[in-house]
Image (cartoon, rainbow, N blue to C red):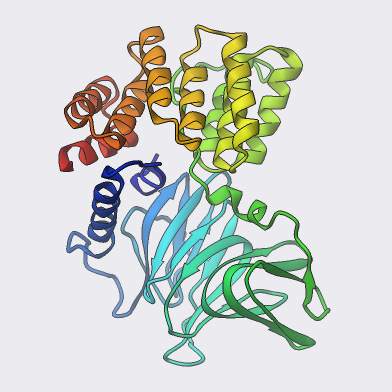
Length: 381
């Protein structure tokens, strides 16, 4: 797990929320704007990689060879970027916008800008999510429709025969040679090949960007890499956990359903479903699923970790801490449980305990980004 997504979401509480938010903000500013970057390969930097998971590739302008992109890679006009299957990335654009790429997404920053003051991006396939508050003009081109943006949060997806634009906040003008329309908050449009764009009613607009969410890990999915059969339940569960880490909840659910067909009372399956539900703000459903996971296996550390996230979403922080303590008793060598304890202890002001728990998590799993990240926050506090 790369650092950017590892620190995306924590639910803080009481007077320490302000302190932690400040630390979070300063840390991100340090990541984005500090002087730790290598020299840019171009005179005009249009974007920089600030988070990535999986395989993200880059093809420089005037080149034919694809190369692996890394954290802090800088991008220039004419460069093409693609996220491979089960991968995602976040880029900070030169106009201070945040651009997230879904798996199987290809974009480029055209060399010929229509206006020097206009930021331009071409989306060939896949999906992007953008949060921008810049007053500078911002345009996105797709094979079917173009979008001109004013300070907003929105989604653009390109499919085989259409393009979809969903606006969460702000204003986006959508147009092609056959027509145009304006989208405001919570509106969407779809444009089919050789047709004008038309508004579309979307009952759950946030479904389009579920892949951009942070799904907390409750299983050590990176362990036990022995080759087993496709129908092996433990393999399916670990793969589902790995898919959630890269934001692919729908694919994870398919694995979980296979598990439940083989083992209808699998506790880990319900624990993962609880994590999906709470992350997608289905808090009541998440509570039912987490409780079922514990009922099915009261010795499961993963079930108690899932319950802790649900309890935190309901602002029951002390109860969440108790659940994590149970997970630690059940599995003392579980780094995820110890780092989870540190998170919650920081949120209620138990700073010395949090530092000890975070350090113990790092000792157990020093190569896991989350343990190092939380230890960093514990030291800062």
